[in-house]
Every structure is written in C-alpha cells, then in structure tokens.
Image (cartoon, rainbow, N blue to C red; front, side, top):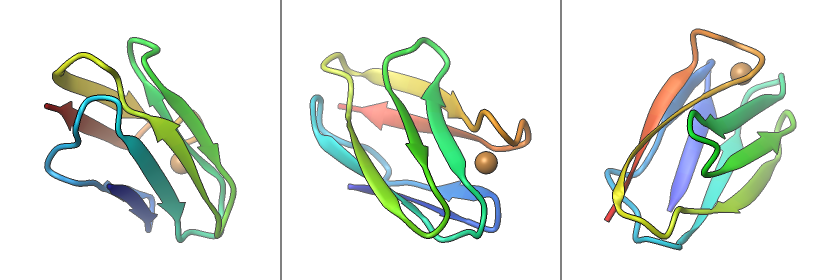
Length: 79
Ligand SMILES: [Cu+2]
C-alpha cells in the first residue's frame, strides 16, 4: 500500500486494510505531508524520500491534505 506523490499530486491505492502500514513515497523535489483532516494519521515526507504511517483501525473514508500546499488533497479509504 503506497501513496505516491508526484508533481504535487497524490496517487493512492483504492483502499487499504484497517491498521495497515501505508508507505508515502515523495518523488518531488519539495517536502510534502499527508495529514488527515480528523487527525487519524499524519506523515511528513522530505523530497525524494519515503515514510510510513499506520492506517486507522476503523473503516471509512479519510480526507487528507498537504500542510505546505493547500491545493494538494486526497482521500484514503480504509476497509
Ligand atoms: Cu505538498
């Protein structure tokens, strides 16, 4: 399960299992974040690196965004 960030856009899996380890891979030359609107998860990923976070234990659709770039929005569906 990987969320790719490229050209200031997220591309994620259709869904992830509850509690899964989700990798965030940043292919841009600037840092980005993956911050859930409800605080369920957060990740900061420097340029050209990857990191992981734990998906929520509860099924649902979680909206997230990048702290640095307000036009970057995504959703993570947990099943
Ligand atoms: Cu960003």
